[in-house]
Image (cartoon, rainbow, N blue to C red; front, side):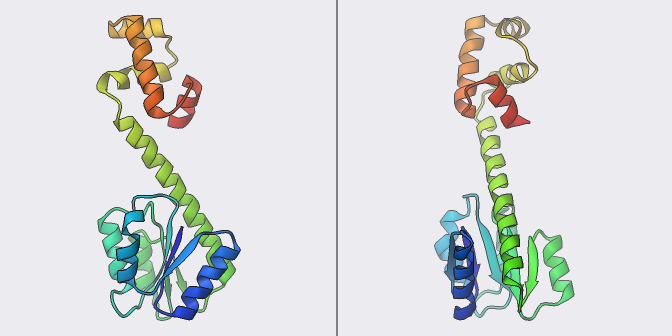
Length: 194
């Protein structure tokens, strides 16, 4: 989802239309506060991007960006700044602190949407990586030991001998690992964790 936060109705609506014409799901927010209030539930999702105007009447874009950085959300919610009043130091500072890009108005809409597509792809990758890490964190210490040996190519009998447990216990741990990691085979598991 592309979130567009700009207080200029015409620009916001045209960006929503441009995004949708390229197959990008988009929604506009007339103010930073509306965005923060309405979209807060989506911050833990992945596959999102934010086009953020720098100068707005309620909360400026840099302050919104600061909130997102403080909450650790910029990897899953890449921010592209839009401004008609940008300066080089502001752009450099924003990029150093993790902004995805910085566009001065007027801008090339197609170039902007190309960057949005790149940001959305990055967000999806970050979300997928976070999901894999969450699944790994759900494994018990013993399941992690079994997982490491499975990834090393060890057969169940070897795993059982090395850990001093029965082969049946290894099979149970293996089944739990596959279930928690949402895979069906060791090859699929290895591919997920590469």
